[in-house]
Image (tube, rainbow, N blue to C red; front, side, top):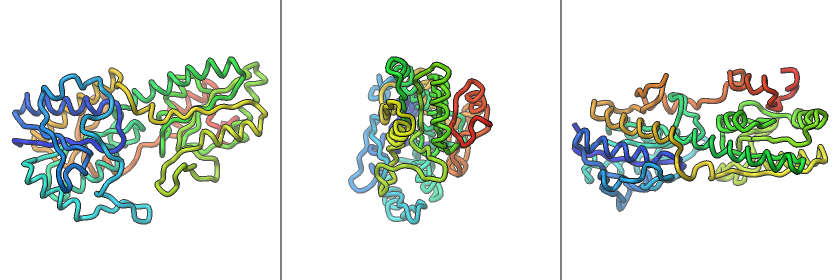
Length: 361
């Protein structure tokens, strides 16, 4: 049994991170008698002059409904470099971090993060350090788990935004475009589009044609609906083209909503407006489901360490929390099946994905 474990949060923030931290601390200290150290600013907190804090049940009291993470997080850092589009893990920072963990008396780590953060965690596991991962991404694109915490809250926010845009679109006979997160996958756009009564859903998995977009807008006009609501994932792309970046050097996506807005105005003559939901999807209090899932993940991560497991990630499968190898968790992203049930349902009720010849599908 470990005497002292550490926990860190990495990647973009997500509703439910503090719920995981709270569950880890309460389970580690109350159930297994372990001390718990919080590492600040992700893996960067164990480089150089370390930044850590002792976590106790009292220090995590009241953080369950809070958004963000009390430990801080980082999207980029010293542990991974991109070379020719592929991640490379320098040996120097990992060696320094392992030495610092030994000095701090941290015997095992719980790492909360998405694909990139867990890939770094796997490097620690390969060097013999005990690691358990907890999946975190509002995009819900980790293949080894059915759901990630933060996703349901992000859907709630996007759906509410669509509801509000629906009323103003109808009042002004406008085309309203809502841009949501989703670099490689369209899970947020798809779920919110279904729940929020979108007329078109544009996702990375189904490249769109402006001819099909215009066809849907004009079809609605003929049917007496002079407004159209469109939800688009930030990574959606036109047939034969690449994603749109607001910062190509740093691979920061952005601008697809504005691009679609301009094209629709030019091609239809209708007034079009774009709303970029951006970080509103990440911020604020987690909903009840995400609090429950995050708490489950945190408690089960500690239990896995106490049982001697390492190099694993906790995951939700068929309603049960299980552990899977970190290598499996990072191997592939989970994309929207283009002929899956949700896509078929959307098309059945008249939602278009603006694929070429969409009306024939």
